[in-house]
Amino acid sequence: MNKRQTITIGIMLAAALALGASVLVRDRLARAPHAEAPHEAPHEAGHADDQHGPQIIAFTDAQIRSADIALRTAGPARLETFIRMPGEIKFNEDRTAHVTPRVEGIVENVHVNLGQQVRKGTVLAVLASADISEQRSALAAAIKRAQLAHTIYLSEKQLWEDKISARQDYLQAEQAWQEADIAVRNARQKLLAFGADSDASGPFNRLALRAPFDGMIVDKHIAVGEAVGAQTKVFTLSDLKTVWAEVVVPAKDLGIVRVGTEALLHSAATQDQVKGKVSFVSAMIGEQTRSARARVVIENPALAWRPGLFVDVDVVTGTASVPVAVEKEAIQLLDGKQVVYCRVQEGFVARTVVLGRSDGRLVEILSGVPAGAVYAAAHSFTVKAEQGKGAAGHDD
Image (cartoon, rainbow, N blue to C red; front, side):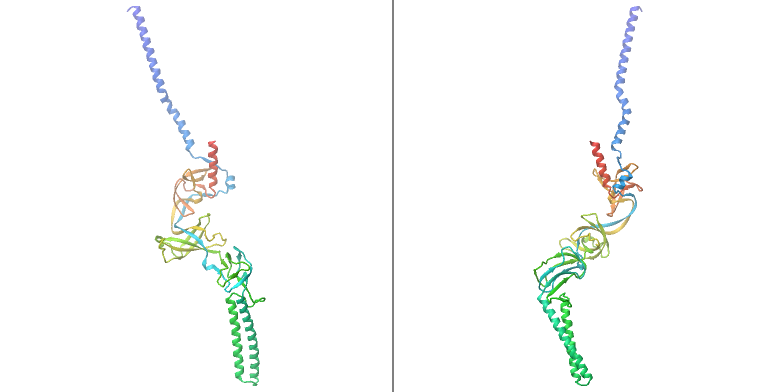
């Protein structure tokens, strides 16, 4: 091999080596993005966790006390199962009276106003009545006749005892006195039947209308100078310390709703609730509604349950034990999901929950909050509001 051939071979080898190096570099560059992806993936995954992980709503102990947030512990509970029926608060008809004059007359004075609380015997109004005047005149005349008859009786008795007059005269005087006394008592009873005071002084024609028992004036149809009849309902008085809840009971539930059954009433307008007992269940079923009426008697000392108020009536049908329950006030709706705000060191965290049974006060938690977890119960909406502020600030 001569010198020229050696140089030619050397050039060809150098070119081959250069071409191979170029191909190798291109292959490495082509594979480089795929090799770096595993190093970037953990960073992206960590960012996703930061976005969708639990958001802490900051709350200090002082802020919790200031917002009056009640902290409770989730745990086992006994729930009362019930059926819910619609109802309406009504007057207790056993303690409601329509006050009427019982005689015709003209109104002279009205002493009470609509909505006023009155005591038994309170004068509601004063009427001038000719019938009352005649009856008082009859009573006064009967009293005078009885007094004269009694005097004659005593005189005849003395004459008979002295053997001056016959016993028959004495007996006749005694009978006349007794009849006169009966006439007096009869006249008094007539006045009492009219609602008038038989011993009242002053004009004979005055009639005072009085409250038959303690209660509130819930209706009034009387004014000074007005002529009223004997059957005119001038006042309606009701003792609102007990009221009735009229309940509509479907026919299928009549086997459950019975006299003596306990019931829990919820106001449709407020969060108030009160317990009562079924005192009456109708024996008839409505042809149109295919339901019966029931009545629940409830105590109303604060007069909070007003007639006309619509209520939900829960009649207890049994009890059930659940492993985890929270108070109903703890449940909040967030982005279409039911959540409970659980307490953590820095504040609260919203936990999505699956709900089970409820008795109106407690709610069973099927998943989302474990037993022993501390959560916000009353005023938990404050935590939700604070979370909304934080989300708005983050969007800005």
